[in-house]
Length: 242
Image (cartoon, rainbow, N blue to C red; front, top):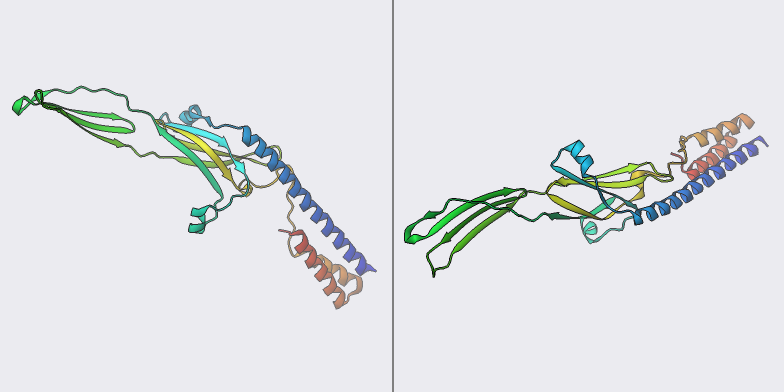
């Protein structure tokens, strides 16, 4: 009878832990649905004023809520044999070059007038030269425009939410660039699971040991100990203790 009581207790605990896992999963799924609805109505926002205070006046920053759902491999990921955990799509625009410069005009052979200009307006570095011969000849303008590199930093972070942690993406870049954040998505595991429920941690060997000791103390029989240990091991596998 004592052995049966031990087995029944272990099975009852297994059922309770299993129901807890199911409940946690359902709450997580519901929380992700609510989170996705909030993300759908959220828009990207510029937080340059904060970036200026923290990173300097030459930096602009944008942030947006991140969709949390399973990501399917695209063609490139399949080819590279990688599993993406997050994706951020963005479009960068560089402001137009609007500037003027003056330079001395020189007169060369054949009364050809020429001048050279240099303009540096980040991200543009412009070198230009012009030659204007007497009419009816045609003038010549040569322009060389180089662009500075466009450094971008992407930060994926988590913030406490009502049920599941909120996922956010923040992109920073130089002040002369404007970014538009498109689709921002990541797998839910990056920000963890439900925050409203406490986590539990049970050693994987504890149920088996408990079953073996209970059976051994009841009958002091090797067979009883094996039965208790087997049931305890099954309990540990069922609840997925970690």
